[in-house]
View 1: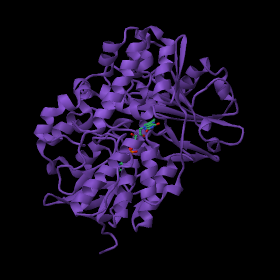
View 2: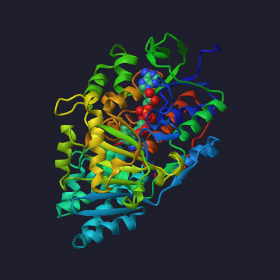
View 3: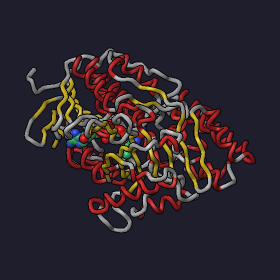
View 4: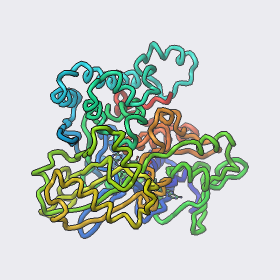
Length: 509
Ligand SMILES: Cc1cc2nc3c(=O)[nH]c(=O)nc-3n(C[C@H](O)[C@H](O)[C@H](O)COP(=O)(O)OP(=O)(O)OC[C@H]3O[C@@H](n4cnc5c(N)ncnc54)[C@H](O)[C@@H]3O)c2cc1C
């Protein structure tokens, strides 16, 4: 075998890419990971500035136990430490704050304390989440057997009833007070779409795992990426940065390798693309190698919203004012008004402030707190202004929004950097800086996203554009599922356990 020949090439080193690469390397396949950026990790990448470590995007992870199980299976469990956090968030609305503890009972009670008159509706709403979750956990990944389809209304009544609903429709069905509806959907900025557009199914799945308690990766999520890469290398694989793939080479309808932008060529009969789906099909493969219907389908799909991030450190003891690792702040009770601000682009909205040093004080210098403020933001601002020119003004306004909670927040900063949708696009090549792959609307979840096996022989996909959906643990799940499909193609006997079968449903309807 020549030095440039591999069994599998993985394009992109996001968590989806490195988790699939690590499993395939463990199974004995020769694997190469190619990353276009200067560092590995995509949205899990962290950057160092003056002795401080900043997570570029991911701040918390659900389903830490599943990921710990996978790392142990790969023999790299001691390479990174995932630590549970005992609460979810604090939500600040005009005139009301709600602290959301971890654990479904405490979470439900926190809402009932504020809105006791609607205790039954609150219990039903969060109970639906659990019911859908359990129904999903009992089902196979993909429902293809027509007999099973016929039985679905009986097997999974809650799921069938709500699978095409938006979060707003379900809130309206079970709750009366508009402020309670807003409080119960306070987490929507995590999913980049307001309740009127957000799939209830996606929201339930997300809340369903997050409510059990999120995890932080000590030292930053880069450690998790590096642990997967250690598993790749220990099993004879390679990983290169500054290796942007320009073309996935297709000969006679089959994948035969890749060519990089600087002219290097690598051969493999299987390529897994963890890169942005539009780029994968439009540029890396090319429409000429794809069925017309598939190209039309991908072009019709709508990407998720982008975001702006401000990375800062301060000598102020912000924990005097902020009691959760993440605080959402709303200027309106109506999330549709907040969404209008998001689309306008001028006023920060759909925003949260994370105190990273509440989870790991080693990220900043002694005596400092590290803050990451995030706002949901459009790639093209509604006011027509350019993000490059507006970046610093917007970053200042975003921090300024939190001064109603932390007086003098901007006066004690020891470092400050800002990123916009253009930054996300540049560093990760996600289409228009999309934060979560396709938007999480009811018509773009589960099996309505992209399958792992693409319609070109030898091409597979993983990451947040595929059917498991977005967020750190779900893209790891997508990496596991993509690897399983490649193992089956090669006839490998390696069994990849599910690690937490009852809790990680991933049904594609
Ligand atoms: C601001 C922000 C905050 C977030 N917060 C959280 C959070 O707290 N918790 C959470 O779970 N999720 C969070 N998410 C979502 C989560 O980060 C993503 O869903 C997930 O990390 C995506 O992983 P991925 O494997 O799909 O790909 P990505 O991380 O997008 O990686 C794709 C990789 O492919 C590379 N690539 C692209 N094109 C090429 C090419 N041609 N050649 C070679 N390489 C290429 C890119 O450089 C990149 O490294 C957040 C996202 C954002 C933007």
